[in-house]
Image (cartoon, rainbow, N blue to C red):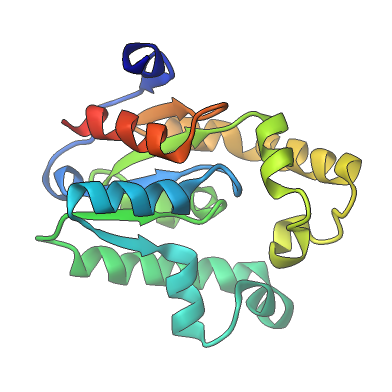
Length: 195
């Protein structure tokens, strides 16, 4: 079973040196399981867990939808890069798992910050999996605002994935296909990658 699960892994490039051996960043579209898998993985590794979106909300004193509404996406992306930079600076000697936001890798600054400083794992989910996982959750996600029915949600996911999938693939050191896998199994696969 586990050997078959490793068939879901594709290695893209070496992580580089330094902090990448200690910090694992999880990338992927919203709803692919980054935060859930990240918490499980961090617990198994005895590592700290950080959710970038949660840190941004704590620093800003407002939710991500409130930031998007009051300041716009561009301001949010600046906050995201600043929060990521500050966080990575504090992680120099600590083992950690970092759940990135679904759009973190869409900004060049964030990609640069992560490159060589983390082992970036792309949790790749199919459109069907994402629709199933995100159904009924559009209100809390600015990029899905107004996508209340399945057809609209699917169209929005498809459009965003067309823009993002190549960025996820090219930024990651490994891709794990997560369809039909439980979060615990995904954490097992990532543990094997970093062993």
